[in-house]
Each structure stands twice: as structure tokens, then as C-alpha cells.
Image (cartoon, rainbow, N blue to C red; front, side, top):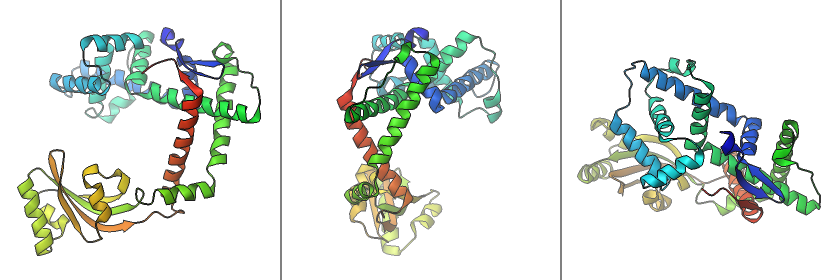
Length: 332
């Protein structure tokens, strides 16, 4: 783990950030404790399974999860997987243990979460590393730190200020102070750019995407069955939820933002009127019916809409600064 932590990740201005800086920031933010806790739970799951638990995951399910993991990261060949593992300094057994533990997480009783696994320091370190890397958290935290480093560079340039930073060579206290300085700079930037006028303008620019649809959704496997269901609703006036119960299916009821709707139905929902049935629409291997109850335009004083506006606006501004000011040394 120490070998990995000394490797360089990105450069901001004159400072080079290493994985140990990312982990230190994660400790300050509270994320690293959560990663360690999940890693210890993973060890407890595996120990529980080794002790003869009935919740053992079938081999074919582990194989499928492993294949999905590899395809998501373009690790198609065995050689590509080996290089990826070597780069992160753990082996295939540790990786497969993480996959197995992830699958066991939904199968074992909650009491296992509180179990204290009997493992030595090296096993615990490997489990923490595997959880941080395989979950994607370590790279996410690197991006989060790079955003703060970019904003500090922006602030220094604007104020023409020089900030002494001894980076990874400073004492632990100095490095923690540097993380705190990054966070303060980021919060100042956030407060400066997320003005009421800027948020209102972002809401006006996303009126369509942030319109909410109150609806019921019925998903069926067969196209003929979906067409019959649609006919019953349209011609006979049957409620979609009642129809679903009669045929032994369940509807999904709720409110979602239009931008979160499946692409296949998004444009149709945009033009649909309250009380209208949409579909059947082919989505993957299913046929979807949507009963629209109401369409709710975004209001600039709606807390949920404001949260989206703030996130959207901040993300765009920070991404621009990261692109301009961060040089990535560690390539995905």
C-alpha cells in the first residue's frame, strides 16, 4: 500500500499530489473511515462464508460479476486485467474476494456487519486497498481533491497571492492544514458563484429537464400483453394500477425529473398531457406504459430544484478550472 501511496496522481501549479495526499484528504473529509469500515465488513463476510454459511455465492454469479467489472473498465483480455491489478498493487485473489464480498453483502444477516474479522495487518490493508480501488472511491476522491486544488490555483492567480505549500514532504499537521486550506478556498468559490441570480438563470435554462413527472409505470415482457393493457386503459378507462394488480404485476409510482426518464420515453413524456397514457414503448427487453398524473414545472424557490441548479452550475465551473489547471500524471 505504501508503494502505491507514494505514486504521483496529478499536478496543480507547482505542487504534485500523490495517492497519500488523496487518502489524507479522504481522512479529513471522513470518507476513509467509511471505506475502512466496508473493508472490515468484507473480511467478515468472507470469514462467515468460510465458516460454512448457507449464503455462499454461486460460481457462475461471481464469474458474471467479474466479467461485468472487467467490461466496465475495458479490461477485456487477461493481460489487461493483470496489468490493472499490478498497477494497483494487489492480486487476482484479492480482487475476486472483493467481488465475492460485494455479492455476499446482500445475502448475509445484519449481525455479520458487526462481526470483528480475525485478520492480520496485511490482510486488512489489502482489503482496504481493494475496497478503495474496486469501488471506484479512490479515483472519485482524487477527482474531488483535484477540484479543490484547481480552485485554490484559481484563487491564487486572481489574488496574485503565493501560498507556501510543502506538499507531501511536510509534517502531518502541515499536510492537514493544506487540506483545510483547499477546502476553505473551495467553499469561498462556491459561495461566490452560487448567487441567487446565477441559480435563477440556471433554473430558467433547464426548465424542460427539471420538469417533474408524477406518474405510474408498468413494465411488461411481451409486446402483445403491453398493447392489450394499453387498450384496456384507453378504451375501457381501467386504471393502470388496478390493471396491474389484476394481471399480477406491480406499478412503479412516484415523481421523477424529466432528465432522469429513460431516453426512449423522455421525448414522449415531454409532450404528454396529465391524464394521458404513454406507450407501450420498447425499453431494453421490456415494454413500458406510463400513466401521467401531473407535470410540475420547476420553481426557482423549490429546494430540490435549487439543489440541482447549484450542483449543475458548480460542476460546470469547477470542471473548467480542473481542465485548465490540473495535469493528470496517473492515467485511468
